[in-house]
Length: 490
Image 1: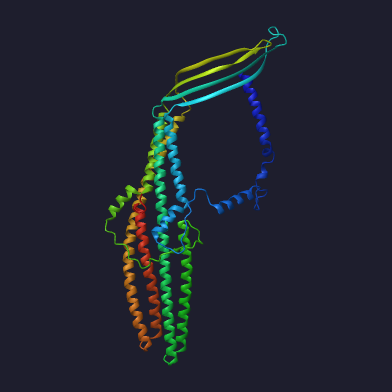
Image 2: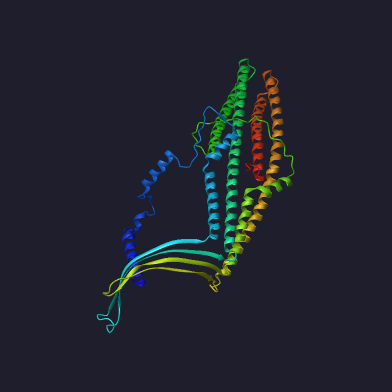
């Protein structure tokens, strides 16, 4: 009876596959570009475009909508808060951490028994060939109708560490995903901070160029006044106008750079470039204090809290668990099994009447599974797992070396930035005094035009350097905090 039922099922399955797959199988290349030399509009392309348009209008379902107050001036901390809530990369990392936690739950679920309810119902007519000396006509037929509901329980009692290795690997991967989530937040905080101070530097450049334009105009007015009193020549006036035009060009160039820096900042935050948002100008805020710890202290802190290093360590732990699991495959598995079922049906042979059955069937016992030889598969799995563990260990050591170098560099860069800012401030003070003195001398005929023009250019450069140095200090301070893992710690 079972052979006949299986054959009938296979026949219907084959027919279903032929009917359902015939349309695609007959013309598979209808779904591909006809030629390799031209773009192609796929049949489903308009539907996908419409779906994207609908997503653009309504937004994804789980996205966090953040309203921007156009009358408010946003500080750096507020911009970081918006970025952490709106940047889709944080939601991606969050979902990955949740998936890793679910995977750990799946691994722990292997410790529980499996209980299954199954019901089988069959109506079968089975003709079988038989010698004509037994049955006239040479065909023996049987008809059966039955239903068998069953409840089974299977419990892996002993596996010599397979499940423990699976759970340990899943928990380590969950830790890797969790610190990856924290690392993504730190990266976003750093990107926003870096772009914020890049915008600050460009704003300082704009301010310096505006001041340079005012100085150039003042110099032009002085040259024109001296020319009217026949104390200056026409070339001096023309050169003064040239300086004014140059300063105007540099101001507009700085304004364009400010626009680009603003776009980069908004992109790192995760809001649209056209958003109407006012960002505070901190070009004159007090600078951070000098670093008062040693580089060794900073390195020690980085090696214990950087999320990328913790993720590497978690990867090593997961690979160690995989090695234990591969070695456990050499040992047997002991499974406890039991089932209870009811056989409810009837059967008739040839032209006899149906005979009914309605009885209980059950079984219980243990099953020992032990693979004795499988073509060295287990040995190769152990070797592969050990190789992956060594790879993860080497990657951890390399990541540590990189972290040490990053801390060293950011530590020194921060100190150098502070020293450069002090030098830039001194240069600016000296350039302002030189400009004032030279300009006064020029108005009274005691200095030449080339002298005052060079002094004006030096002052413009000094202003730009001072603003850039101030922004660099804050950027390097953020890079140092990022390299030690201090930025946006949980």
